[in-house]
Image 1 (cartoon, helix red, strand yellow):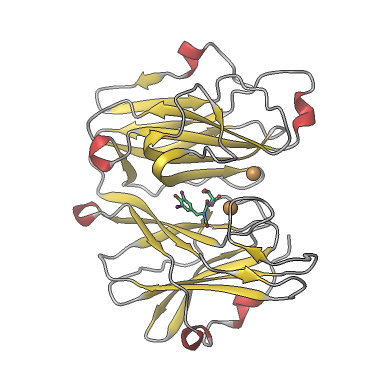
Image 2: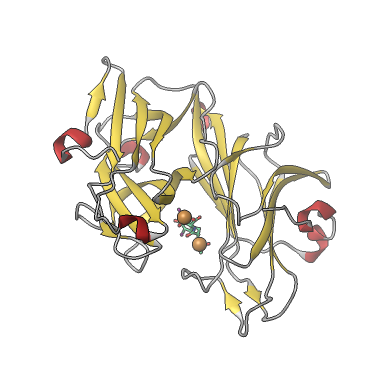
Length: 316
Ligand code: IYT
Ligand code: CU
Ligand code: CU
């Protein structure tokens, strides 16, 4: 869908001196196997600072399982497109996730006056679009796919900067047959206030539910909870939860080892697991920090107070 010539398709449409639209699409690809992950890169079209203020997906529901937009200094490959499911990956060095679209999930909207800052100063010189193609049998007619998205950008400084706080477990081991394994993550927050407005969960097949919280004076306030078996998009947060200096940010992933005959570790393949809770926030642009992460294991003492809902399943 949406395939036009390469020159036409990867276009920048200047609407006036301030506003710019960038169209990022797959260059007419034919996935060759089910669960193919393909990536394409696109340079940020300006060396000055620019702000992404809206994402408009162009994805074919029949073929695309999910797509993720990353920002980085340089892409993992200089080809038109490449297989980014395996060792090659998306970016050379650090990658930051800015947008996720998943089949059957509502699209994420940035709040008014909020933008993702890109451009050489921000360390984001390239966009890398990753598309997970699901069932490949729809390509038996060899048609080409040009799914992707349009970024609406402006050079006008935004009052608030969007950012991502990633909580991830690094040392979880799930024992075979074990009915419940919790992966607990927590970090003290010691920076300027952030205002979470969307969240995304990610595990592989063994994840049942993932919850994220702010803890203040011993009180746990839910930022978001979701089943990672539902489409892994960014969902709006349940409450307006401001996170500020002195708070703790925490997450729990609930896994089951049922159906496995050996230990499952954190890793990149679908036989491994991951435990991720992404918080998309905005922050006053005066002291914007666009990317933060937490990889500390939460203590037993802290997590004995986690609300019981954290272990309740979500129907899929
Ligand atoms: C080991 C793990 O949990 N990897 C996650 C989180 C992660 C994301 C990014 C780690 C790093 C990153 O630069 I961006 I280091 C992970 O790979 N998650 C996948 C995608 O890579 C985004 C996911 O779908 O959430
Ligand atoms: Cu997918
Ligand atoms: Cu993963």
